[in-house]
Amino acid sequence: MDFQPVLDDIVSTLKPELGAGKVASYIPALARVSPHQLGIALRTREGAEYCAGDATTLFSIQSVSKVFSLTLAMRNLGEVLWQRMGREPSGNPFNSLVQLEAEHGVPRNPFINAGAIAVADRLVSTCGDGRAEILALLSSLCGEAVAFDEEVAASEAATGFRNIALANFMKGFGNIDNDVAPVLDLYFHQCSVAMNCVQLARAIGYLCNDGAHPLDGSALVSDRQARRINSLMLTCGTYDAAGEFAFRIGLPCKSGVGGGIVAVLPDTLSLCVWSPGLDETGNSLLGMKALEMFVARTGLSVF
Ligand SMILES: NC(=O)CC[C@H](N)C(=O)O
Image (cartoon, rainbow, N blue to C red; front, side, top):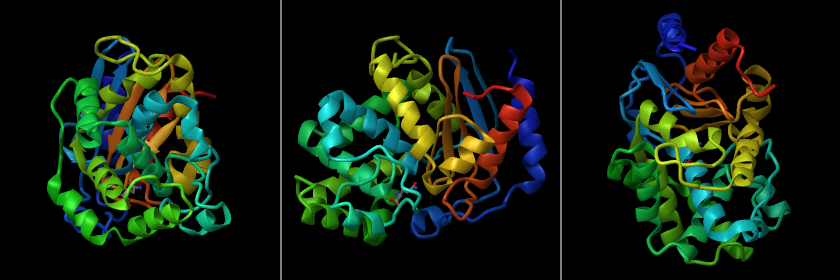
């Protein structure tokens, strides 16, 4: 199937809406990004790539990084990881503290902030250098060198009061083994990675390829682990909008407050859309519309 006309049509149809939504302002370095941008990239399992709009502009991947940190932690720890976190949708905002107290410091899933911080703690314990391993994984998956945006990382470290609270709260329950400082340093850095749509569509390709590396075909995770990551993306990848995403789009997705969303159609293709304006749940407003248009025009969905 030639996806190019579909992607071109999505970008031109949404053009009049560019600027809709609100860029994340609680991280000062993100507040300066222009919302008048929209990119989309697609990669088939066989390796054909298509893109349209601002698909080669770098942006802050933010919570999209949680898929890759989870992947590393599942590789390093196997089943033991699940002693530290659950697999249920939270039904709460991504940075919520309320459930954690009732649930004794065990986050609902690895894709809310508390869960990703607990994953970062596991990486601090099991990786020699967590920061380097995240960058190495992402660079290998997209075949290009990627880097942290140190300004974004510093900006978030200076203003990440909720994340600092989440980490300390979990530490109080014994669910963080390391000092909170290195754990948060890893978390803020993974969120700060700068990538573009083409790179992310390629990097997430192992999830439509039974866990095999998109470029060299080696086993990154097992087929079963890839299925589980896709399940978590479908049920928890877009926070308390996960039901709406499943209803309107029907693909496993993971979003970030930089405005990126990755999406997977298992065994077939991976996608990344980016537009910095967010809705009230912290998901890209036009990104979600673009994905909805994609499934409507192609009829492709897991359902
Ligand atoms: N949803 C997100 O992308 C949140 C990530 C952001 N770095 C935070 O911790 O608040």
